[in-house]
Length: 371
Ligand code: DAH
Image (cartoon, rainbow, N blue to C red; front, side, top):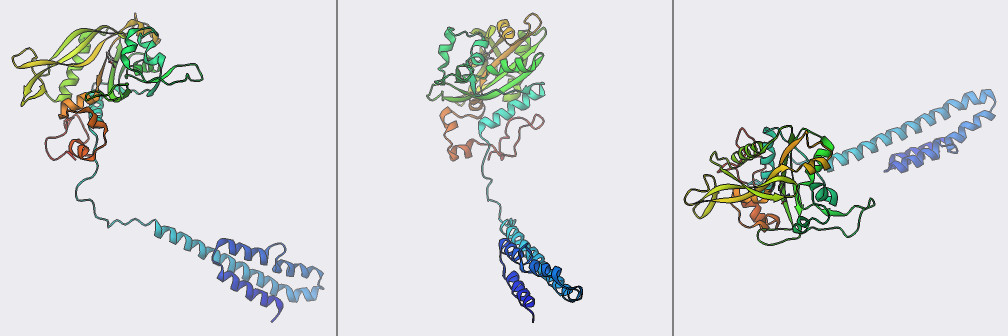
């Protein structure tokens, strides 16, 4: 047996013993690399006489082919092993049993936001959003609250200590009203939007949390008047509370961004010691509950958002989403909304597949659908 045959046997043994791709590569370099023993053997052919070369060359070539095939085969096998191991480890056990009872539920705030979006989508509104970290111009100035305006003091604002690169005073938005400005600036007129989202005020007790949810509404068009406002809110509240006898009372009020401004009260009756919305608030045993702020958009606000107030009018409103949820689903402590207590969520949460739709009713069904 020649030296080359012995080297070949050693190499084939090493190749079949290799357990990593790196080890195979090392064997390839040792045999077929520039200075590998097969390559060096091939180089000796150049110095041989033609006869000799004809005799020796086929043997060396055969060795090269054999080593090369062994390398490829081992490499393929190793790669298949690696893939097999990965597939085995990523295996999904579909025989796992489903939990006995459904787990997880939709938070009442999410549920109510979905209900609101559904109702207003049907009325032709789209959903607009804005940042929770807002600048002072959008949150106050453009809403007709100049720096010295007393209404600013009522907002218990969380300010950021430093101004941003553009010199703007940043804050956590105190209401969703800045989205009115952003929508008008970005989309122009006409416009029909709702803007649900988180807002922040430095305030905390049984009915106030530092973070809470509002939904803003804005309609901008030609020839808009208070009648449109009243019809829209009445239609929305009837759909939301699923009662046809919702009665509204508009009371004059003041907001810097609306003129005139109205506070909207809803008639309620007392059933089993609980206030239930519906009916004429003036009837015996009935009353009025203040529900939301609203008004015709102040022409100064329309102008500051870049529209011509002689051409475009509109109305707007803002209300607390958490409060709506409490009224509709009967919770009495706002703080529990944000405690993350799974028992509370289990009790007040909604089944994930119970998506509110107008055709099936936007409210959760009485039985069987609570998570
Ligand atoms: N932004 C007001 C607040 O948070 C609520 C509000 C009142 C919004 C009247 C409006 C409006 O759009 O027209 O207290």
